[in-house]
Each structure stands twice: as structure tokens, then as C-alpha cells.
Amino acid sequence: MCQCQFQRRPEQSAAEKLHRATLAGAADVVGKARQNAARDDDESRANCQYEDTFLRQCVGENERACVRGADCECMHIDVAQPFVGVECILPWEQKNEAKRGMCLPCSRATTQVLFYDIVHSGVHVNGLIQCFYNEHSKLGEYRLSAMLICPPGGPIQNMPMPIVRHQRNAYKVFKDRDIFYMKQLEVDFC
Image: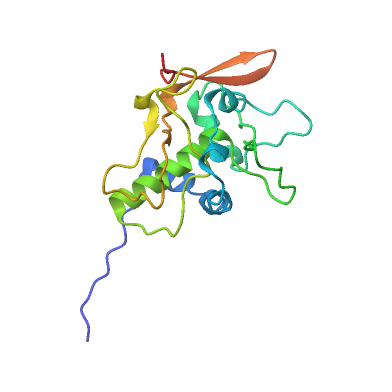
């Protein structure tokens, strides 16, 4: 008779649960990335000015809220001023009426989680994990220290171009005429 005892996996910490919750919608990021892979580099770039227009809640009747709803990253930036971000549609994309997408902070967070899972956990992903890239070290764009960049020997096949890293304390929430907005902090190239 077997005397084996099975140990239950330890309960996940709140941080681990939140980290895993960020992956909800990751399949959409990878799918969008595959669609954009055929684009030339200039066409798959999202500049700082364009991204800034998506750091807010919905304001127009034709806009949609982030697919992550109550789990949206915008709900956690400033817990005293939570809101659900607006769906981020890239300049070359058309709104998909069949399914909603993520807001910009959720897209950044998901790309970052996937990147670190690949680098540190050995998770294998076939294809790109980013839908677009960002320029840095140019006037009007991001500073290098704000970027998530694949290191030498890293999974360049999954994330070949730099993208702004997601860090909750790099945003400031403010309200203007009953609409929540965010400003990115310490990211501008001077």
C-alpha cells in the first residue's frame, strides 16, 4: 500500500493572484501581435502623443471600456480615484465590434508580465507578445529608462522592439470636468 502524502500547493499571495489576473486577455495581445507582425516597423510604432490620448476613461458614446473591467489596471493606479480605462485602438486598427480590447496600461502590463514569464520562468510563447513598439531617446518620445527592452540573449523573437514598461507609480490620476485622466510621470525624453 502506498504511503505517499500529497502536499497541497500553497495558497497564492495577493500579488501573485494580481499578476496572474493581468494575464486575462493575454491571448488577445499575442493575437494582435501576430496580425501586426507583417507590418513594417514605422507602421507598428505608437508615439507618446498618441498614447497619451488613451490615458483616461471613456468620454465618447462610440468608445468602449477596457475588457478587463473591474480588474483594469486603471482601477489600481490611485485607489482613491479608480476608473476603468478606455479601449486602446492603435492607429492602423479598426474597432472590432465582436470583442473589446484592453486599455493602454492593461496592454503594457500584460506585455510586461508575459515578457518576465518568458525570461524568468521559462514559459514558451510562439510569436510576438507586443502589438506595437515605442520610440525612445528622441524629443517628444520616451526616455530610455522608461522602456522595457529585450536584453542580449533574451527572447528577441517574442519582443524584438522596445516598449514602455508598466509601473503603477509612473502615472498620476487627475479629474477634469468629471472625467478621470492619467499623466505619465518621469517618462519624457528631454
